[in-house]
Length: 546
Image (cartoon, rainbow, N blue to C red; front, side):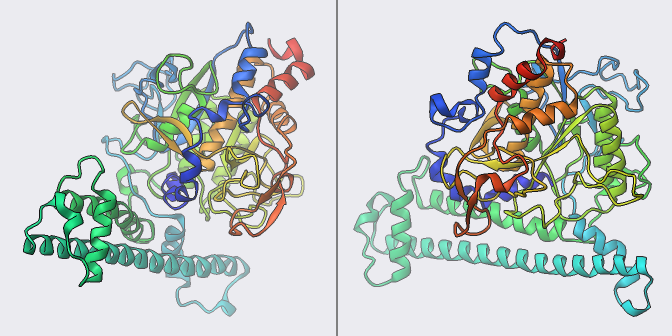
């Protein structure tokens, strides 16, 4: 779900004060020299990579869209060498017309694009309800019982989620109404007492508690830019509540609406998971904020004097759009992975995830396909403050069980948790998923300053932001040591990660449970570019650099 970002509406407040003290480039810093637990990128370039040759590496960003004309990204975007832009032909015969910067699997041939979509839980309820809504579980076959169990759980989750969303809408509307009511009472008394906006302090508030509260609010906001009248304050209140009301209203209207169908825009045969050639070349789409931010972290142009510096200095970003404002669909994820692998990507960044999977077999096949092509896939662990050893966050490196001789896990896959810039008990981000068996390592994912659409920049946080940090480090390794395989790069990243001797709060326990940091991931560490380059030099040397 692209809106791993929108989930941050609720986690960002816990880090507001901390974010104010974080430098914009903190993730590139080194703990020994800067007292900030970054990835030591500046140190690596200055001491280990200076004078070394590198080659272009293609990193596919499978996401909700990328602003390929951004001032800090346009020079590092992948350009399909076999495609002539805008001629309406499939020049390179790869099945995709005018795929200059990548491909959009959630768009229609007529140029329209999917923006909102529902969540997988809603789709599962819709798909199974005709079979199991009034079914007697005692009369079902073994296969049907499995589907029935999924349906019952999904239906319960969907109904509960819709109820909570409706409560949130009502709550925020009630708060907005109360705030406006207080303001109206203040305005009324100001008129009765003949006072202007600049005479708020002279208003008699002794007879009405609501008026007193309204005046208190006015005093807090009156010095804000553009606040010069009661009407300005009224607009501020409406603007403040608009975002959360729209967010939860959209959940009801789209995310948890089993009858909403965005797929008619795409026009494919959705039930045919083998279908590959659909969509359009618009890789930016209606909302490219998330994917643009991810791309900048990986490879925004370094040392150009604008914006910020990406981690990797010789990368081409391939944009693959599969994630709507809602849950991504397995068919599109599978095709996105295949497209990236077929068109030269060495690394795939996947900053998305969901709680249910409809067509996991299709994704599994694509992951196996990419592995054979030598691609390293890097995936966000999730922002639910959950243990991924106990809760599955799709897509996953676990393959569906088949014959005994089939591997159960992808070898060229990594799941990434998020850490903060605080080298103490708050080191692990409070929203981050974790897992001693299922999360490979951690990376900076709090107050990450990067590119956003229309030549803007912003700080985001989430495992979505930590994942491109690892993708960027992996890209540097592949660029300077092109002889390294995907499995070797993963091994280096894991073994060279910084093993911190820290007791940290476990996400989701409200700062009550403390464990050793090493117990929250497979590697027990935080990714570090300096250590990774040093290990590559010592272990593989010049042979891998060719």
